[in-house]
Length: 236
Length: 299
Image (cartoon, rainbow over all chains, first blue to last red; front, side):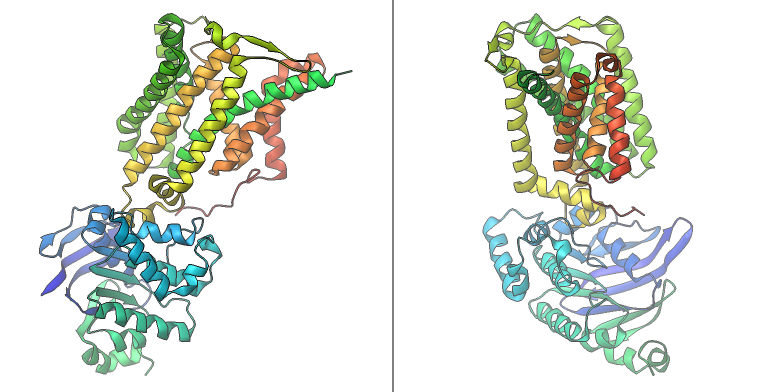
């Protein structure tokens, strides 16, 4: 069963197409990776799924409904959550306020409290710093905060934009363990990465984008074994 | 020489004017924080609020409490209408379009008031319970002075709680910092903006009332200079900073009164000029304002 389906998506900034005729599917419960170099259109696709950017052509289906004309808040209420690139946390708000904003669309107070303590047990550092202004956190801690905030919305589909960007190798490994964990809890994940080696280790299916188009797609091991992918993206 | 009593008296006057500027600056900085709009229409709300209470309180003799709630409601409603009718359609367009619209709205209201009420100033004869005089050995003051200070403190405290503790307050700060990320948190941006306009406009209308009751005279164009000065207070305090707006308001109010009080009388004609001299001075020393934060340029 697919959870998200994109058909012939074209997105333009002005007249310049950033995404050209891309079709992709995300199966329920899977981790799907969107790989590619800078400027390949990965972030644009995530933003379009979230509704921040409007498609020029094509359709986006989620749980069987065309969501093309849904506003970002409507999509959040349907269970789609984006953890934006560069973390996109609110620097001037406290850690806890950031986390509460993740649950902005929810009103089940007890559930929110429960999820908050769950996030704190996943990332004890955040609890230690909950009163602190988020801008004062280290890069790794900000990434934890962004992920924790994403979880606070109880996502069905989580869109992760370059989660490993700027993290130390040890933290990247922790991050990927975390991603595998939340998948096991039933969250479907669409992962955007430049770090193809790492992403291909955890994902079920991968799409490789080049200048706005899908160049290669397939199961993780198939993509990994392709010669030109190895050369261009996996270092030999 | 100037006596201690004179100094205290003038300081109190400065604080009162500071309260008025601070409340106005609060509304302006809230809107600016989210939309990057210098809302000139804010000044129009001062005029409208002043005349509204003039009719309700002075002409029709409503009780004070009723008049307060009515003017707050009236201001809030005007803010909502202004947002929905004028500003909402321009969202996503260039920021300068908003600016021109707010100037246009101000000009419209000013001329509308000139036609409807009168080009002549009105005497705002506040009810006697607001003008009762108290004398102590140092200070002479009226009930309205206590009222302005008291009401301003209460409003600022409520506003502080609102912005710090409530869900809408947190959403408003988040939206001011990053509109796009706020929307992907599920925050309805349009609602946040409307709330900012409603609150800001209600405050501006209420300030119009205080202005009238305190200074005893209202006119169709009273909102312009007051609005501009409130914006100066915003800049002095640090653009987009809420505590800064309050600090800026008080600094400006005190500076305006004290400079007139202690400079030779020949300078008193330059009272308004003083305000802008202070602005230039602050900008020279600390361009981001007293409590300003450096803000990243929006792409």
